[in-house]
Length: 263
Image 1 (cartoon, rainbow, N blue to C red):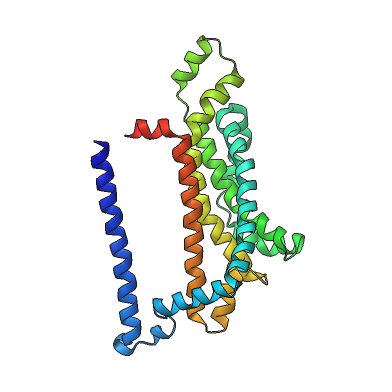
Image 2 (cartoon, rainbow, N blue to C red):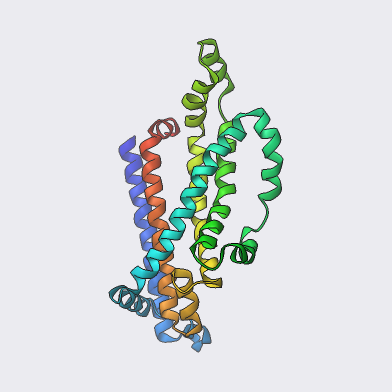
């Protein structure tokens, strides 16, 4: 059964790669032939030109420099949000008192467009890394907190009652049952936060920065170097994909029991 599932997944992965290849091949053909002589091809440069620009940026070390700045900001902001949001969400979700006190506050501030607060963050923290890291943290915090909160609520009450009958204390129940039951919810929230964190960071770097991937995209757009602009957009996809794969690897290692139950 497992071998069949693996073959099926491999088949779908090959199909996905073929779709991606066909997309870029069609883009290359249409842009090179100036299909219907549309003005849009002035902006959508051929993928071959984009790859050439990507190689040039990499060789000149501009790409590495800008990517390192962005990775530092997003890693710190994401880590702070996770370190605060996971335990806070678990406590709010598991504790009745915590849910009654903080639940309404989370629901109140969750819909707020946190990117709109960036001008205020610039006034308070300046245009340096602090304001960008804080924005990433703020953007990810509520997603991670809500994931952990619903994970804390998802614990099987029958299991909790059985543990209490066996003499387990509240602290032992929290660390042995609540946290592990909430892990699938937490990892789902972390995966969503990766995409959201890049949106927040690129927006912040476009508004006020002199380095970083977001700043590079805006710089090359203003310089009409659209091939280089698309190159950095694809770099975001690559880096976000790598972050997601690292997270999925950690999830597979920690939650083998959950995958076994799912199968």
